Amino acid sequence: MDRFKLKISIPLISQVITILLLSLQPVSSQINSLGSFENSICQSNEHAIFHACAIKAAALRPQLTTADNRPDFSGYWRRRAWIFEDFEAHPVTADDFGGTSGIVDPPDGKIPIQPWAKEKSIENAERYLHHNAACFLSGPAGTMYMTSRFQFQQDDQYLIMVGEQLTAHPYRIIPLDGRPHAAEILMWNGDPRGHWDGNTLIINSPNHNAKYLLDQRGHFITEEATITERMTLVDHNTIHYSATFEDPNVYKRPFTVAFAFRRDADENPEIWEEACYENNKEQMRLFLNNGYMLYPGITGAEARQLKIAWEQRQ
Image 1 (cartoon, rainbow, N blue to C red):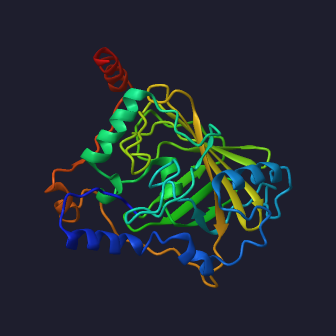
Image 2: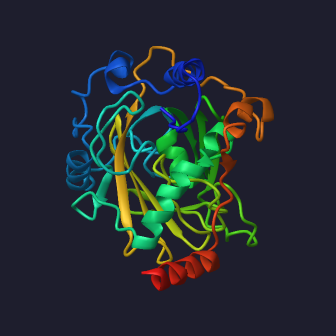
């Protein structure tokens, strides 16, 4: 559930919760449509447990391959992560589904954030409207853990991802043919390129604008951050997905989140178009009228200046 922290009336809160629950259902309400996990090598959806199992299973040869003998991710999938609320472990509340930490490195499951940036994250959560409420995208990795359902299509040239999400209709086109990155034009999902390391697809997406928050607790990166995604087909029904964030401006060290994608077991799966357009003033009116602003992002240079100012205050 997107948590916008509105200082508003009960009716509006009820509207927001009702709308968001339509697309972001808890695990228990989705289990029937997903089918059993018994056919998966790694059955647990607990992030750390699944990650450890998938690492061991990665040496197995994929059951599905493309014409060029690469793992084939094609099909309909559902992500099994609840880290869009909070990367770290968080309890079930009236506003959160709850969940264990999605961070698998560092092993303590904590975000290795610098003290000044922790203070900034709290301010972000209290001051800014979540980017999804404005129909903006969530960045390359954020798209993967914000979006509930995907259709993947793949050949030797591209991996195409079409997603279903209430507050946006995200898609990604990832070239696999070795072409160079485009000019340095900053984009919401960056400029992705995929390459293979054995059976694992590695996706690098530079040139991202970083005008989105990583989770609903206000965690953030700058445009100088490096985001490295990895996808491994563990078995016919399971994809091991991970994303490593590296930004020395904000964090003490790189950190990695990981979770499962499970093949959609619906008899006739499909991706619905959920219309939403950027800067929909009518949709955002209630939020903006309560003093919230669109998150403007922060550059690496600005982050370094804020860090110096914070240290001088201590």
